[in-house]
Length: 581
Image 1 (spheres, helix red, strand yellow):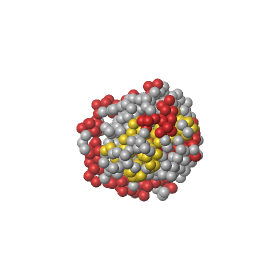
Image 2 (image 1 turned 90 degrees about the horizontal axis):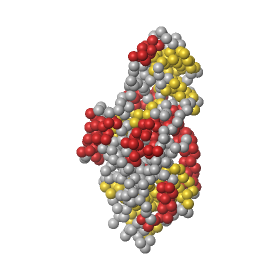
Image 3 (image 1 turned 90 degrees about the vertical axis):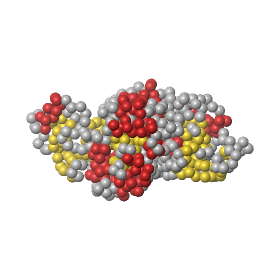
């Protein structure tokens, strides 16, 4: 609950008692009551940013005719990384608020892995420039595991001051689940910081089951957004956890989990996007799109709205929001109907912030000087991208469609006389490299990627979860080198090259993760990049070419990944050579 003073409290009581007019009355609406599961025709009276009462006898200094629209609580995204929208927090808010989102639970571990607590502070400053209520979790795993080369290290001691802020709901997704299961001293210290402050601990446990899942839940982890099957979801619900059902730009798990929702367990189900690009937001929507999916699949619309509002507020102890009731924040969305969920108007703390898809307030952006210039790559030569193999039988990271998990594949490849890989267009195997970009260490990990489909040129990114080093794939060392050099020169982002020349790019000057451009322009640039990737480089059209590649370096998602130190078997939680002997 936000701080309440006596004057505000007194005015709210007077307005509720009809002693003074309300600031705003929204009349002629159908109120969606997530507390009772009902819908009723009513009016909503608002004063000092809070709902003070219901009833057609209220009068306001301002009155708004909803014309029969459905008044629902503002939508809440239970877990998102704003950085993965490739836009700043201000731009992100401008895109999602008109779609009915009024609050997000954001984990800024992307930028914190690059800039540490300075990155965290930048995100807080930037969020103050948007009407969207952004509640930042304290990133738990910076780096995601001790086996990575990130830009910063945040330990349990560093977390104590930020975690003490009442606006920080808890500890962000605890990706290093082996650290918990094996009782790493530092990981236990991090958990204790959150537990002793009575904060929420977010989880991240793909594939975890049995005694390991029991231990993970027993440690205090309260949520998980990595469920991809009904079985995984059920196992977590049985252990008292909340399940964040995800639909983003790369991961589409919600559709697989809907069959597991019942009238008994839906109160433990939340909606989240995790990672959502501007193009996806502008074309498909945000949490409103999740609602459309749920209702189309046969879920009761009020139940669906409960998963998008009250459940999340209760999970993260946001007692001032999540439902429409006297005393709650007047975060209200007026939907045209409860099938396509088009937001006609959005009110945040009683102020009309969006109408007919347009964000109404003007805003200025936070200066980015403290989080730019993040490309610190030790000079290297094209020869350092060569492999020196003695045999042709190798491991390959095999991309799995509609997710970020991979398979540990095997393949036979061609080598030159020095043992370096020779690309064969007839075989969907390509070289993949990860270069350290934070501390000029010169580390370069080399391996193989399968099912990406590229037949020409190269792709290089500075968005590579979660340590965000440079990740690159290409058909030759020369193409890869050209892409990496162009990426460094433009301060990070995305680069596509063909014949050693840049054919498409998007600079991301904010930590090499976010653009300083408007969301619509970022979306247009990404669309052009996707089209170029498919048409010029022949990348597999069944995958998202940029975001899919971003996750190939995430060492906590099974089965096989790659980092600056080489290929990594997630099931064994250890590095493995590219060559199988």
